[in-house]
Length: 118
Image (tube, rainbow, N blue to C red; front, side, top):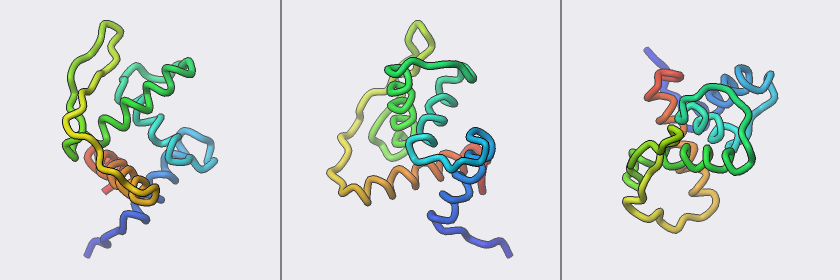
């Protein structure tokens, strides 16, 4: 019988794996995980990004993560290959703890969908 993991356990598994793979074992925080998702979604591989590009990568990740929840929808790729999303529905007003749970749940769903964790 397969063990069912809680959201917290799945989150810890993802952070541990990503930290080992991308941060020499130093634990990544949620912003680091979001940044990595943005790089993945951009699809241009490892490169050096400027500060504003890093912010844009995190925005791409947030949009991608919240797309299945109906908040964003992919719109187009620009001439430089960067994805753009449009807002479908405004995010509800959430307390900081609720925001954290929503984004962690979305991250877990993203990595489960990729087969990174099960």
